[in-house]
Image (cartoon, rainbow, N blue to C red; front, side):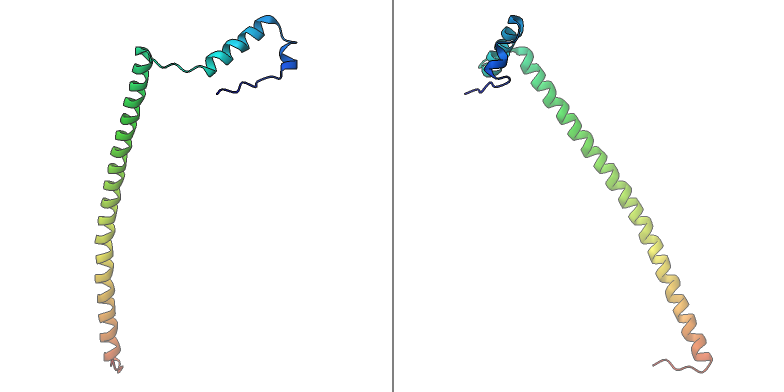
Length: 107
């Protein structure tokens, strides 16, 4: 059931006839439901569905590209991290060697 309550009855009677008939037409068309869909509306619905699929596909492609970029950045960070570890271990070995040369004892 459709409830049409744009304007109270008191206000409706003060409006010009053209406005009242327009409001009545809007109420009737808003409350009625069409059981048959036109070819044009079907085409519009299909077009909207296709557009949504296209947008979803593009979003998926964008995510793949972003993921690839993040993996590339991650690989670069892994290489850099391994290099830092190697340098750190060398620094520790050198420090331990110098410490022992100066009389220090490592347990």
